[in-house]
Length: 319
Image 1 (cartoon, rainbow, N blue to C red):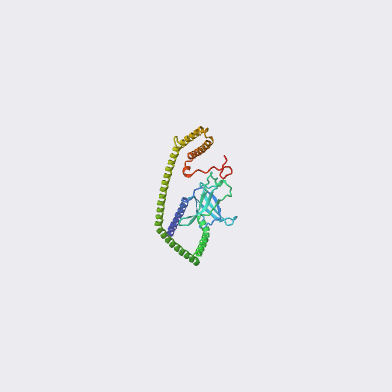
Image 2 (tube, one colour):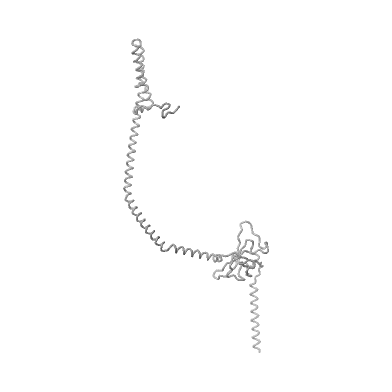
């Protein structure tokens, strides 16, 4: 009987110590934060999310998931009730996504903010009572939703690749490659021919340059000779038209003829008048010649210039 009492006392002591340890653990791990409940709503796949999952605001733990259920009013939507620390900056721009923890793959709720550029958003508590935080698809949900589309595009690309690599297209591709090889060989031959012709072209170019140089030298010599002839003709004209020159002597001879004509008018007037007229005509012609030589010295070599066209003639310009 005494052994049984000792065993009962030991058992009661163990139970008491166990209860004490449990109470101590609960007391040490209790959450003393003031929590506020929010409801998340959205058409998102919540695979892996369980009650008591963590709620993080930009990576910082701020609460827990309290319940998960379907939205009875909107088909396909889910409702997630969360308890969040009242110090968390939840406002009208806050939204939620589903995140996963590293290797374990445990899901949690990630809260984030749209970060408005102008002004601060009002706290969510100041809005209507039926306001909800939107639950948006996360990266994994987006990849899952777009996976079928990507697989369909890959399937279509593989079909097009198979069509591209069909036997007929392969034959066409081989024919094209052969044509390209022939074109490359022809280009190589043309390049070799061009290289062989380059020295001849260079020699012809040098000969042409030498001929052009000799021609330019000859033109320069001709121009110098023309300048020398023009200067000599100009000096000749100046000598003829200057004082004591041929034209001056012709003028003096004309004056002598006029004086002789006047002195001989009383002797042989009819014949002397004819002679005087001839002398005057010759004098005028000589004067005209001198005037032409003075105005256009080149007429001595090129001949007299054509007369100016009169009215009604081609090239006539009215003054």
